[in-house]
Length: 252
Image (cartoon, rainbow, N blue to C red):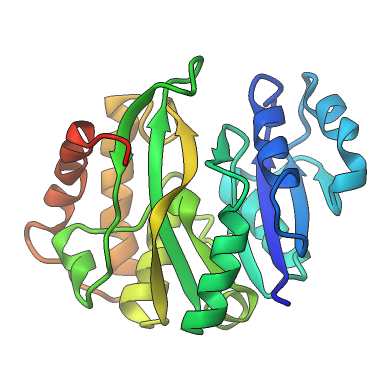
């Protein structure tokens, strides 16, 4: 049976990480390797992690060079055939997420998978702020500003080893660059799971301020150049604008 490695990246995450951990350890899928990569937290994060130590395969706690460096550490440590990343302020939407992910990988024989996501209020996680329905991927869609929600993205370990990890030269767009590289440039076989699998608290690193959002958009341009790819004139304008429509969607 398919083994899935789930990697959680944390730093001073005592406020939210227990929700994240419980959403993983309560999954009904048995073949899960759970890895937590902590950046050397100074709050109660490690104490909370310790409560679940019998359900966590590996805990790495040390200084890192940022979130993408931590993700790379987790990927290198993972032994599952499929790897998913769930940050410490996100959590799975229900107990069958990994069962559904595993079934999709096995039936579609895909290299990568993505699904839908909802943004929720940081304090009241039952309150949905916006819904990201990713939709089926069509070749060339990145040129139209499309990207899958990174917190729903699963990839085979084999493809990580073939096409490389997150580029730590980027501070806020390394997730976009990696998915652009894998899906658009190398055309890995990707499948869409049409359901909400992840709930993400608002206030993340790349969208917490307009300044950070503009900086991320500049890095998006760098991501295309890094891969010797040329976007359309409207690609990087439409990418942030397309998110406006997410506010008008409701939970399905």
